[in-house]
Length: 385
Ligand code: SF4
Image (cartoon, rainbow, N blue to C red; front, side):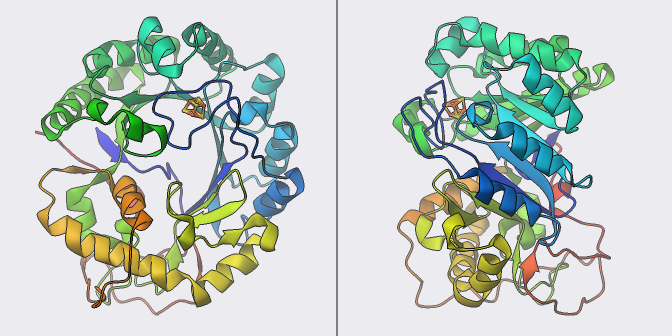
């Protein structure tokens, strides 16, 4: 069983585009607070422009999300433009309640993967997702996609309220024809902050990891992979680059400035790495100019603050973190809300994986990667005995 990153199977960098804030659901936990009343929406021409820069920026994976991305008026154009880059891996994150035949053929033609959120049995899902009938609608959408051989990952937000349903959810995902089941422990972000008593404590988190490991072994022969979204403490300790702090002289990436994921929020704000990061750390907005120009400027003017945030978080949190699972993005996002530069910067964070020879310093860019080292952020994994 793996602990996977939100960046999925990226060979290099990822672009995550929140096309709009509007969603037909209003889920209790929504980390970006999607709702029917939300009006923010990215202009289509700017979205297409950003996607057109993916190759130049070294972006290999595109996530289209929202809100509910299938409600975005230009969704067809976005998907067609993205699919023109045959090396760009596309994943659409949807609640699947509004899937129509046209979406299925669009997704199929674009060779896209689809992440569908399902949180439990019908009663629980409808309650958690705030709409009676949501489960059945999602199930219908999923069935259409599976029938068309579109690869589907079922993503479940796991809280105290549905932890006991885990085995049933995995069985449901396998029977439904999903290729992957991904557990997302409830985060203290967005509307998730309003249900703090539902977050897993450490013992429950360990139970989740143990049970999911068992389920991963059981369902592998049926073609279903199981993993959990988050970071592995041992991986981050060994590879600080997984925590966005990889500037150490001994670190295998040895990249002076690097962003592995660029997030475009529904209001146009461009953020490094983390959807819920304080906008004070923003790269800019999509309205300010071409993405590549803004990223280049960020490395000159803004990256250092973000780097300091990550370094100080790493230095303060990692040594005393006592469990294997660590919700790294949540921790950095929370700390970003009230962060002030420390008097002494944690610039001496150096960790060596010992897996590769020294690399020359590289010029700034997005998604620069070590070409010789066999280790990447996607190697984050955990084996629970
Ligand atoms: S379906 Fe997704 S975007 Fe919509 S409210 Fe629920 S979690 Fe948020």
